[in-house]
Amino acid sequence: MTKYTMLIFAFIFSISISIHARDKILRLEQFIDLAKKNDPDFEKIQSDRSKLDYLVDKNLPSRKILLSLQSEHEVASSNNQDSSKTTASISKDIISTGTNLSLTQINTEKAGSVDKETEVRMEQSIYKNFMGRDVRLKKDALNVEREIVKLQILDSYENYISEISKIYLDFAQSYINLKLAREISRETLRLENNVLKKRKKNIATRTDVNRIKLHVILKKEDVINREIEYVSVKEKVKRIIGKELDNEIPEIDINLPAGYSFGSDITKIKNKSLRVYKIQQLNENIASKNYLLSKRELYPDVNLVAGYNYNKNKTDTSSSNNNEAIVGIKINIPIGDSTAKADKKSELLKFMKSKIERKKVFKDTEQQFKEQKNRLEQLKKKLELSREKVRVAGQILEDEKRRYLYAKLTLERLIEIKNDFAEYRFKYNTDLINFNKSCLEWLNLNDMLLAQKSLNQ
Image (cartoon, rainbow, N blue to C red; front, side, top):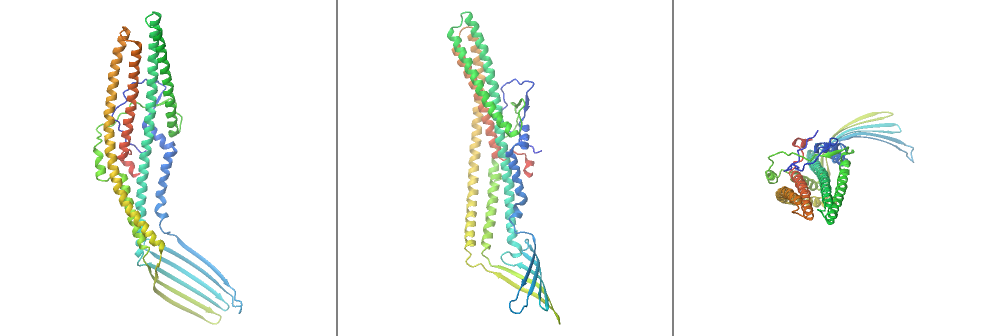
């Protein structure tokens, strides 16, 4: 089974959430494995591998052996000298050397005579496709294209893993937010109970009661909204893994490999080892080969011809044999081939564009590196601040709760503090997920989402 590198997150989910015994954790690796087995989008990527089996042979001249049979009967209108002719031939193109071999036998029968002719013939290209040069060049170009397909499949794999991992992170975030919303709702109910008790003792006012009831309603409404969000993301997860989620929840503590430096892989863009750049280099290589082939299409086709003829003639009164050796040259000269000239111009333009595109991709990727690295650094700082806000706001809330118990703080102000604390906690979850998603994008940019050994599969 292909192993994927763990997603590099800089922090651990620090929110404490109770998990019922009946709940099962759907871990990230399990999620990816199930997606590989059941997601049609993954199957589509897998099916692209089949191109590798036929890409080269499909675009090269056929290696077939051609067997041809022909029978003719000629009817003479004047002298009743009808005749029949049967031709059988077998031929084979040896594409690696530009050689054509053929064996032909012709039997002709007329009134009073039988003529049998056997010819062995070889044609060898000695100029345009010298010793199969053009075919070999075309094969080289197709093999390069095959390598590009491999790299593109790997890119598709990484993009797929990145996208479904982001959905998994959304799954984790929606679950955490739902649990947090329920926890806050329960706390609000406890506060409502406390206010109602104070009302009975005439410590709290009717306004305090209505205010806390409104607060309870708002928190219940928030729970409903969080449930809708969780169910929506859960449906996406179910579609990807192809099964129902039986009390399965996402993992909320994802430990990450330590020691990863976001600056260490900037060398990849400098030494041009990224797949996106390799693909552009290979595209330029193909364009160069195709341009050379298009130029040669305007060359004369010169073939050396060699063969042997054996002819046997038999009549009612006599028979004769005739043997001939054949040596010659066959020349085809394209004159005014506007199509070939247009193809040459077209391939030259593609070649020039491929060189420009390679330079553009290099600059664009370098810019992406800088922007993504800067984004990661800023998101990390933002996450640290968000976490600190939760810590400080939590301490403030505990202090203000004590003040409220001693009637030194109004209920209205306590509710505001609670709302602020809840908002900071939800904001921390969002910042954490955004940072982790940015890590995914960085890994994808660095060709690091797939394990190294999977690159050869």
